Amino acid sequence: MEQELRSLVAVAFALLLVMLRLDAERFGVAEYAGAVTGERRTVLGWRLAWFALALALIGVVAVIYPGPAWQLGLRFGDRGAALLAGVAYALVGAGQAIALARLRLGQLPARRPASVLGPALNGLATALVDEAAFRGLILGLLLASGLDAGVAIVIQALVYALATRTGAPGRDLYLLVCALGFGLAGGWLTVETGGIGAALIGHAVTRMALAVVLEPAAAETGEAVG
Image (cartoon, rainbow, N blue to C red):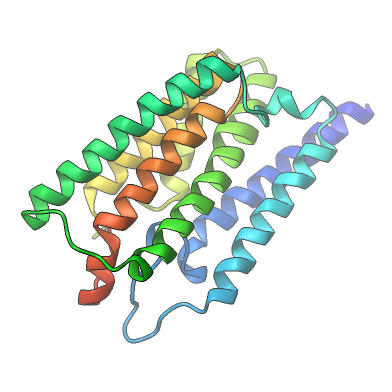
């Protein structure tokens, strides 16, 4: 009985994490990082608060869950396989970011290091939260419920795409494709390597690359990326 109750509480806190991800725009993080809404830039403290709360919720689920944290994917996984797959994922992700910048801007933009540091760090932190929350907790809880791995991967990818609001009206369709790609690729890699290491490496590099080549340009013109 106690284990069932702890599992239900863990699911409840995981759903709170999904709700927090839905509210990312209010805190100026994730896809909205570095973007200008009207004439107001998000205060750094709000972004840090979002990351702190997200990490706290992840920690609560890991502690409450009756099984070990590795069952929720909260580990690096097989080191060799995760590193190899993560680097391959990162190369593909960075390559598509560069190709997208050339397609939309005609060339890679010249940025001052100070102008890309914030978006790049935000991309890294967001990737950490996303992978721990969705490819870790959500996928892990789905698998623990007895779902087939393929079905669980698809479900968490769809939940992730919805939670990031990338399919909302007026948003850039490319961001929706990226979100689904992160979810499907990351979920598959997590299952295959036994942890979120590979998914985290690939997601972080891809998101940082997108932030560096696209987001500063949007911030300078007063438009949000996506």
